[in-house]
Length: 394
Ligand SMILES: [Zn+2]
Image (cartoon, protein in one colour):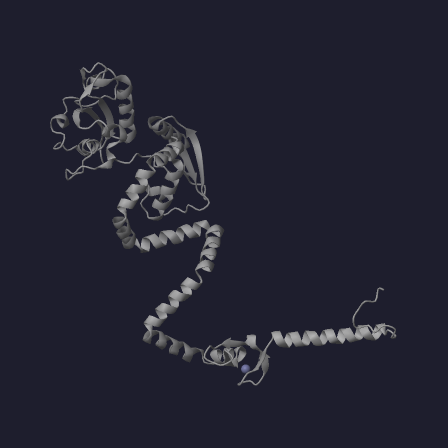
């Protein structure tokens, strides 16, 4: 009942042991034939050894699709004739530039996926090296990049226009006035203030590499540096004041900030301008135009920007600021200054904005604040906003 195999003869004695050996032999024969089927063999015409076909390189022009000599023979030949083959290859490449180009391109395309994967791994393994490579590439291809930018400026503009709100929000969200400290691996440190200290850090790093930074940071090694936020501030004047105090307290041999304030190359000015755009109150009665207070090293240029103009008189200058661009045209009303530093001018601007409103900003006096300086509404710039040139520090 249990013996239902087709090959067992009913009633015949069973030689269990023999049948097991039989099966084994059959099985081995089967394996051998499978191997022979799967692994084709071929005899090398040079070394006369019979080898699996895998050990022969491909040659589509031959009947069996394989070359005559086995790979080990070819390898030996190449090694023995290395110099001669190299020269021949060079000569062939020089004689067939088109073929070389096609081959290169084909190989490049064929390996596109592998290359992308390898690049991805390399980026993840060493992001700094990747940044270095990118930087080098950008430096080597400056012309091409400039060309591309020129040709795709509209594309850039469209992108920023489409995403203006998101970009502004992101930037605003990251804005945080603070005093930061960069500590180098050798213990030296540098103190600064910024509204985006992380971006400022990157700027220091790349400028130091090009020797365009604050002198003490030029050529410094930014590897293994730490970036600390020392104080978070409400606004720029506060950050500048905190920065000055902290530098004074931290001044030591290892502090890279200069003890002597560098001579300013330009003076700073606080200007007051008024909008000439017609304006009415709720009942439709005419109202005087808005007053705006700002700070600059070049009042003529700044007024031009507020009015959306370039130096050549053409409109479209985007540096006018969001608020003032809505109330063009603007006219010069008063100029306070000179101030020897940005921080001093910022403080003056801050004070003026707080203490005086509207037309009152033309009546700021030293009695209101010691930082009030210069002729104000009677300054020559008000009469000649384009022609007046600010004096330079001596
Ligand atoms: Zn061989």
